[in-house]
Image (cartoon, rainbow, N blue to C red; front, side):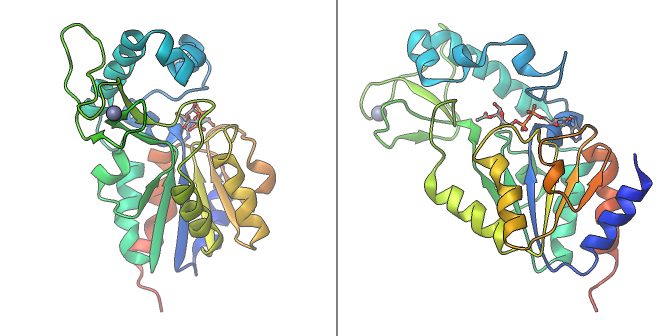
Length: 252
Ligand code: OAD
Ligand code: ZN
């Protein structure tokens, strides 16, 4: 970890009352949830995203895609929030607002106790109707055949309530995310490669609004060029230290 980076980031956050946070898959890596693009361990090094994370892939082979998501749902259901999720949840009390915009679909921020969370890529534990008839389920049943259940509203397939490649994000949530980021006094970007838009555009949007950006990641990322402070380290190791002063000292 770069000590200079941590000190600079702490200084930058010192007087901040409204904090926005953007998280990606690295946030949950220490909970045992694999990232997408890390070599060896990333999901996209082992699986084909076009087959498993696109509307075309799903229509091509619904049981295959449904079973892959069932596997990931199990993995997420068995995972626990890590020290980084917990540090963010704890820190909320020491800011006037702490809004987390997450690309993660695992719900671990909420399970750690964070309440102001915008899930711009959806949530893997929910399902919805493939034909958008409006039906949504919190916990879909698993059929012995491995096939996705049918929508009780219209008879189409149920699909995971996540954003797939080639799909638009919910415009209401995306606008809320942009407003949270532009209206903050600092943006903390954690564990994202910065390769997937529109999420990856939020740090630049912050910077253009005059909001300083802190990037926390063990590796260089696409977002480093817009960062005012870079902290090299993992979410679980760094966040308790980075946010400690905010939590321990009441604002004066
Ligand atoms: P990526 O897999 O692209 O990037 C993960 C990032 O986390 C990398 O920059 C790693 O260096 C970093 N990382 C790894 N371990 C970490 C740790 N312990 N602490 C902090 N950082 C760590 O994941 P995302 O940027 O989230 O889209 O990917 C963006 C989107 O691409 C995902 O939301 C998903 C995927 O396709 C959808 O599902 C729509
Ligand atoms: Zn339906």
